Amino acid sequence: MTNRRRFVKTLLGGAGALLTPRSLIGHSTLREFNLVSTALFYDQPTDDPWSRVPKILARIKAPVFPKRDFPVTDFGAAGDGAKDCTAAFQQAIAACNRAGGGRVVVPIGTFLTGAIHLKSSVNLHVSEGATVKFDTDPKRYLPVVFTRFEGIECLNYSALIYAFEQENIAVTGTGVLDGSASTENWWAWARRTSDDTASPARDDIRRLLDLGERGVPVEQRLFGQGHLLRPNFIQPYRCRNVQIEGITIRNSPMWEIHPVLSTNVIVRGVKISSHGPNNDGCDPESSRDVLIEDCVFDTGDDCIAIKSGRNNDGRRLHAPAENIVIRNCTMKDGHGGVVLGSEISGDCRNVFVENCHMDSPNLDRAFRFKSNALRGGVVENIFIRNVQIGHVAEAVLTIDFLYETGAAGPYKPVVRNVQLEKVESTASPRVMWVVSFPGSVIDNIRFIDCKFRGVEASEVLQNVGSVSFKNITIEPAKKTRTINSRSTWP
Image (tube, rainbow, N blue to C red; front, side):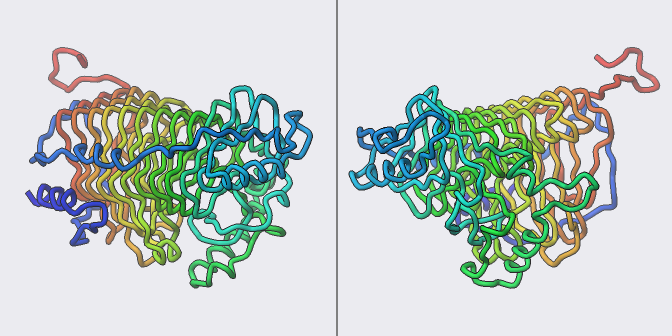
């Protein structure tokens, strides 16, 4: 009944409520379970958490643009793949904005450009057969802009497509955005060298971490030229009413779609194929009312990673990621299908995942929560249903509080009220890899009407509160029988 009261309190608290108390659930030493054909029952809350989804979706509305077109070719752009079209994009966007909005249209051809900065009421429309190809010269992404790098605010290179404090913006069409990143340029900044020494960007990353931990004002956290912090691909920062739809994204320097501190965001029908380091597909960070649907992710890192700032800088802003709906997506290669963390210091709540398909020998986990005692953060009210999973390399569900620095730090992370319903998998080493340390909280993890087949090894649970099952099948890869059974596995 305690879990039921906590669940009801959470739903009634609304998006702005914080769950209390943050009491420590009982912890255990390392436990391993080999669960076969499990059918366990518990007092299921009568409230349906999915009843909140229509209310979230009712607030998420696509921006509306006047029916005016501003072809970039009217401003001097040429689709020959050689001419620098940066100024033409800038002029077309400025003219569209001045006129009260419309579409900046990229026609058939290959258009070479540096940073593109969107303005309010502008829809950058990349037509079928068009490619916007981004220059790899870092100077093309100067002057520096107000941004986040791995969850810490700073002044750094502009994202390839960037917007700051704008409203009603979009990137649409069925064309291609090519970031041109490779091991010869952006990706080389993050790669370990052949003798396995640290990446070239290590010193800059450590310096930024230090500035964030010491609370140095953001305007003094100056990077950009002479430094090696890569830009993201698309970054609306402090924006409202954002739509990214239909496009194909390739070869990103780093994270592909990264809305930060933004509200009312739609990512729909996007195809991402980018296998560089830290090439997350879509990372809504400290953003509210976000819909991600009908997308295909084939990435070098997490397919979707929900974030809310890193360490003290995330706690300084304390802007949670909340009210996020993910549906009808396909996840191929990646470190995780849907991930929460590790930059989660500002908390995360109310995430709904449904009707997705995940399958690849190069997909490590379906669902992953990651934090540690430096990140901290409270992650709660995560609901997953109707997800089909083929093969994953580690586990269906990973909750890892020993990530990177693990227990070394004063901020104990919390994950609670997580429900997986009608989730099925074909092959995985295990269903759960759930590990934490004393003082942290992992509690009220529920599996309902799930089937996990081809499970190869024991479940791993360490320092975990309640994990419950209702109508569950866990079938081993090697089917056996008990000593007194008269038949093999059905």
